[in-house]
Image (cartoon, rainbow over all chains, first blue to last red; front, side):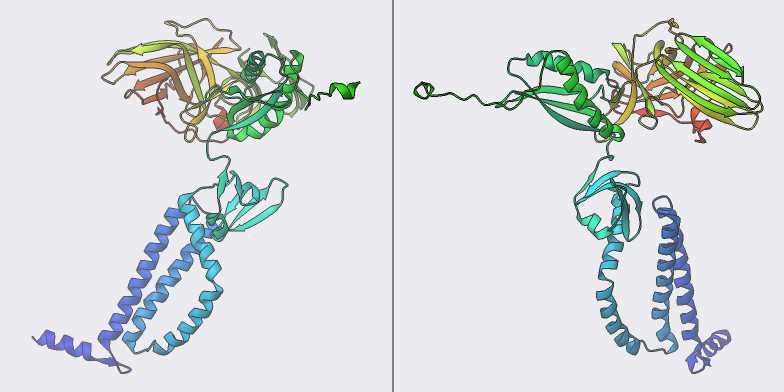
Length: 274
Length: 235
């Protein structure tokens, strides 16, 4: 009883007109905010250390740590009689101003986080986003940097990356490309297909499986059009694509099969002829 | 051809020529394999040249494949619970290393085999593998030593159904190649169910053989003990 009385007396004790209990609550909230900040910081570091650059992770974890502490102060300050209403009015106006100003920054930040979670692209991938094609060099929290195929540095804001259609040429191990090759009507299409298949079979980077396909796609105006569909490892597809078409043309010609020129048969009226 | 040599040597055989020559510290390295030739200059006081078979996934371009797929000429049908050993052939790549007490450096790699790649699994998630087709042998087959090696596979069907096998996939990172006159690998294939299997390698050196230098270790890549899960069927 005596102890309880003493305790309540102690708690009623005032420091600069603030009851001790409020001071203790203030300290407790601040300590909890620090602890929570540290826990969140640690978890962010663990979750993102393999996905983001070290500097980006540090910036992100620091920001979130300080935001946690700030929230702790906002919650705790009324306990020691600091009114936040004035601050809130000023903060509200400031918030609106800042909100408008940082709208795109926040949008990029959130898009960046979603890009890191969804991972549609990775560093080193060959991609096409909108009208930009190239190799992904870095994915930062606000932007993605690409070296386009002309060697030029391109910075894309993350919200643009996130909201655009992304074509990732390296997401899958293998990819297919197609050639359309025409031969003359008098050439044997089956022989041409056998020759092309044999050529493809000898090429290291033309995959065994899925196998290449060749078929007559169209009986065209000037010749028989063959469609040649070739699967290659994604990392080398462009070099194979550049190399093979000419080889197909040369091999067909070596075997007496030629690519036709556009031609038109003109019938002359007999009386004109006379 | 496989073995350890001093830094002044000439090796010839099967349309392959390796020459290291020169006085003092400056040496000329020359290698010809068929029509493929390469020449390098070496500055060295001591050290040795090691020529040995390496993990066969590096040529014609490094980084394309990290797995070797052996396709069997005839399907192999395995009874539930049965363990058996087969021998197949695999394509070899030959590595030339410079070795001294402190470091191992791969200076050249070549092959006499025309490489071919394939996709194991579906296009959206499958993996690119170096491809090779082989007959099945009951005993160690004779091989063209600078072209092919011998792969011994202990197969164990732990599933309760018959399983038909036409392909086996092996991970190059955990591969261990041995050699004497020819290259040799010893692997395990455990059939877990109708569509899934595990391949691993025996890393213990056979009595009459030497272990090849690991290409990944020479490149500074740490080798982890691991198995490859064949998750996209055996045919």
